[in-house]
Structures are given as C-alpha cells and as structure tokens.
Image 1: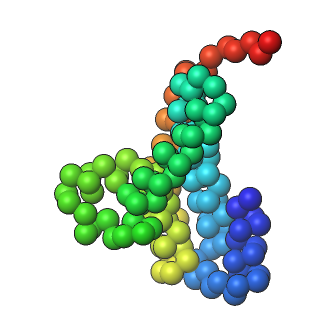
Image 2: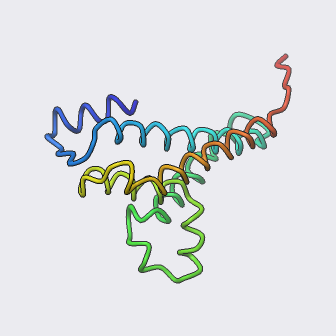
Length: 137
C-alpha cells in the first residue's frame, strides 16, 4: 500500500521528495507496522468482529488530531502535547516532513525512526501477549 501511495503521489501528482524515497518508504512501512500492531492489540480485547471494526475510528481520529496533521501540536495545552508524544503518527508526521520537505537523512531522523520502531516492537509484543486462542464454531 505504501508503494502505491508513494508511486501515485510522485508519478501522478508530481510530489517532490527532497530526501531519500527509500527512507520515506521505510518510514511509511515502519509506521504502518506500528499502527497494525496497535490495532491488533486493541482488537484482541474486542468480544466480536463489530467491536473490533469500531475501534478503527477510535484510533484514527485522535491520532490525526494529536499528531499535528490537522493542527500544530505546539498550539495545544501542555498536557495534551505530552499525550501527543505517545502517538506514533506524531513521529511519522515529523519523519515524513523531514524527508519530503527538508531533505533530511537517517542521521537527522534517527530519533523518530527509533521511536516509531520502538513503538512497533512494543505493540507487537503486546499484540502477541494479548492474543487469545479462539475456536470458531
């Protein structure tokens, strides 16, 4: 999916990427993994498929607001800025902005890459730990 989105943005819409397209792709995949593992972790607590599906907007909407995608995070009250630091999309936005607009490389974006990678690892462990054996009749 990341490949299709990046190829469409660059090829069809002419989006200029000042940094490495490979690093952008790697960051997008790493971010996607963190979101998938977070979703699986939360879905493991759902009692049925409908509850699991309803968790999607509960993750996506607050993530978009707290990430700085819609409003600058520094315009929020201090306590909300602290909460925003626990949202993977916050670091993904910084990563994508650094690569696409500023041409940053791995050295400048190492903190964001490490944090997103750490979150993906944490959510993977939590997803595995909360997984239940379910027998479908």
